[in-house]
Length: 245
Image 1 (cartoon, rainbow, N blue to C red):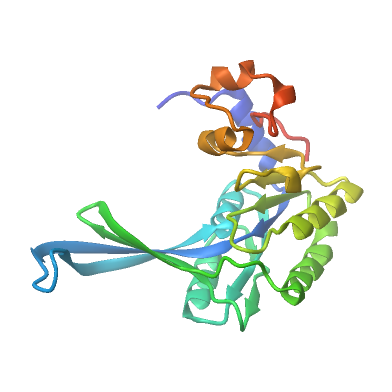
Image 2 (cartoon, helix red, strand yellow; image 1 turned 120 degrees about the horizontal axis):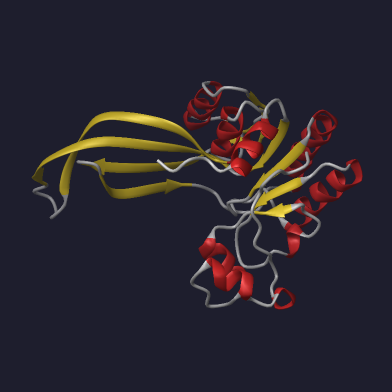
């Protein structure tokens, strides 16, 4: 294991005791761990016999879970359905250290569920159950009202975007604008090719593939990112060292 860099230690220390509001697309990650001993007589596919099932907070819920693990206080704001997956997700979130549930339960929108079949430590298939359409104006108003109530008590806001309907252009811009007025930094885990809706955010954290997709350039190394003309890019590469929130 490589020794931790001094800046990494500083960044972790800076997180201690901070209050972070995580807003975004929450989902339940379900893993079915199976054994395979035969092929189905119905089709040339393996018969997976479930040995055990594990449930893990996914999407924005996973972000909040990890924030809480850094000795910070995480307020999780998103939407789940009034269904069994929603109950399981809320329970999984409650198992995290330092995570406070502000999930809104919807009668009309099901909980996003991603089920993975894993046989002998290899993923066989993933089954997704989701509604990725934009949230209704009424549901967005409900989420925004909860956001406004929580904002005075937080040190930073994380927008965790998985393009599942909550962080629309208008909603995202409204949230960022409110944070700017209060001097609260906004960190964005972005999605898609158009980052204009994140204008005004303090920091964007795309992975390498997402970055090259957004800037529409064929880049292969970090060196090429830093050598690229920043005036021709729609996003900028950053490394968090000691964020002042």
